[in-house]
Image 1 (cartoon, rainbow, N blue to C red):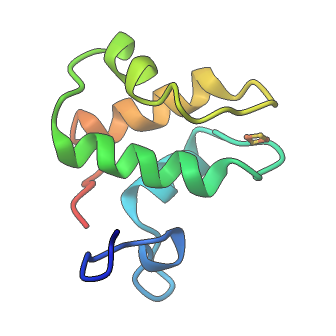
Image 2: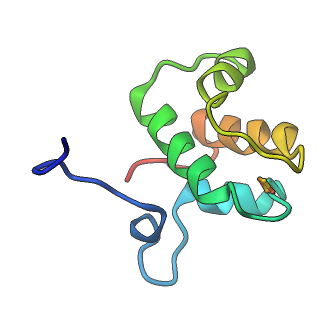
Length: 93
Ligand code: FES
């Protein structure tokens, strides 16, 4: 289904030793605990910002709702995404 599509995984976000702004925001906000869900959370968050549909915390929560974090890091995840969304960190890939 995605034979010719460009797909960026978590490994493709950082530029060498420089974290992607969303990765840096997750670190800054301690937005993970076990880390199992983190690659999916960050990739979804980058897509969310790039699509430009989120205007509020409620939008962030709704658009991230497909990603389950059993640790309950949701408030910190929302804080990290909001920082990037508000331009506190540049989310451009
Ligand atoms: S950080 Fe543990 S499931 Fe998300």
